[in-house]
Image 1 (cartoon, rainbow, N blue to C red):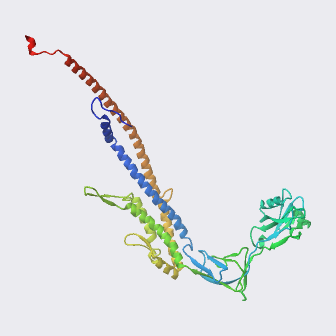
Image 2: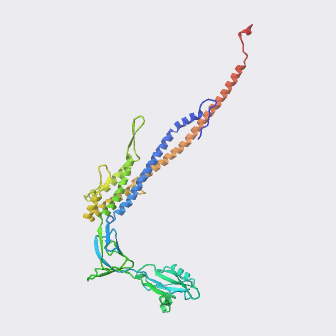
Image 3: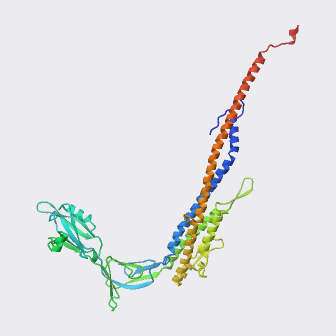
Length: 464
């Protein structure tokens, strides 16, 4: 609220006086506002920490799954074969021969200007003998294509320009293609209904003039142990073979005339990179706590030093959370310390990861390392959830408490706004009344001075 009291009568700067008095009156509210600012800053930092730890719960959950830290390198001796190894793979080697590639079943009609029969009904028979009939809105090529593509037939139709007839009418072919490769996706197509097919009166599209089977749907084949009594054929509806080797995908692109060696080996460096990411995430949590707990010392212009704590300085909830998380990471598992696989705190309390030490450990005994790390990850997950759970986590509860305090302080500040506005109004009325009184006194003083000035003047000679 602005203050406008010029103080012309009293000569006082009433506005300035009231402003100074209001500063004194507002001191308790200013303290409350400072508390709110401090609490809001603390809540912001607590929320940032809680978000990090909540994300760490999911990280610990995922990395603790069987095989999550195992990584493998996979390769083939021929570029036409690519190999991808997942987390469930095992170190292995196998010779394969690509004897057949998967093909997508495709047929094409002869050149036509419209569907030759009315109604324009087609029936598709899949590899299992199931019949599905479709009737187009008309015999136009566009309606035929639309009818096929609007139904879930496992077949797509394409209109292809094919010149013109003797009268100059445009001709088209219709290509029918299975939506996926392999023998099971192969089909037959007929003019006529399913009943016509059953009766043997439907016309196979491949019997029409100029029609053709472009490719027969077939599975890809790998031959294992070729030329031996153990020779084995493995098939796939696509050119990708899953789990010929555990957790390994083999994708082929051409036939081979000689065996191709597929090799899968442990990749200790890649495994170390996976764990390093996990440790780095944990280290970032500890770093945030350290930064917000640090006490800063500043020197004023008078040469005196003062210390200021961070938002986490002396916060028992944060301190307890840090200790619990650190213990979950570094405590031994069945008497074996995580430091044996490169996870440890240095003398300054900073979490470190020794990638070389981890790589050496997992190379020597991958199952042992996996068991140890899974136990650590499980403890970390449980501890982190207890800290950051959105309902009853210790940090979550702390944040809710701080937010409640901020709300209460805000209500007190609002009450002070009303109280201060009332106080200022009272002061303005008092000073206004003072100015009115002073103005009256000034008027009276001026009047009396004038009256005195008009009185007759007498001198000593007037007595004669």
